Length: 167
Image (cartoon, helix red, strand yellow):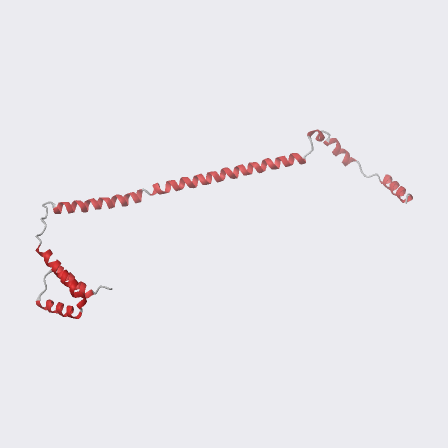
C-alpha cells in the first residue's frame, strides 16, 4: 500500500508542534474520510504526546567544541584522501608499468631466441648444401678449364655422322 502524502504531512506536523483549532478540524475531517488510518494515527498521536513529556537531554558544556572538532577531523580526512589520490597515482601505475615491462622484456627475449634458432637452422641447411672444403681446393683450376674449352666442332660433326651410319 502506498503511503498517503497528506497523512505524512499530518504526522510531521504532530512531531513539531501542537495543532491549532483549524488544523484540528481539518485532521478530524481527514480521519473521517479515511477510517483505516485512525488506529495508526491515534498510536502516533499518543507516542508524540509521550515524547513531548520527556525531559530534554542535558547538553554537555563542550558540545559546540566537540561538533567543531568532528567537522575539522572530517575536513582533514577528506584532504588526506584527496592528496593521496592526487599524489598516489604512481602507487597504482607503478605495478602496472612493471608488469607491462616484464611482458615486453619476455616477448623480446622470446623473439631473439626464435631469430637465433632460425639462423642456426639456415646455417645447418647451408652446410648440407655446400660441398666439402677439400672439393673447393681445386675449384680455381676446374673453373679455368671450363672457361678455356670450347666445343670441338669437328668432333661433334663426326659424332653425328657415326650416329647416322649406325641407324
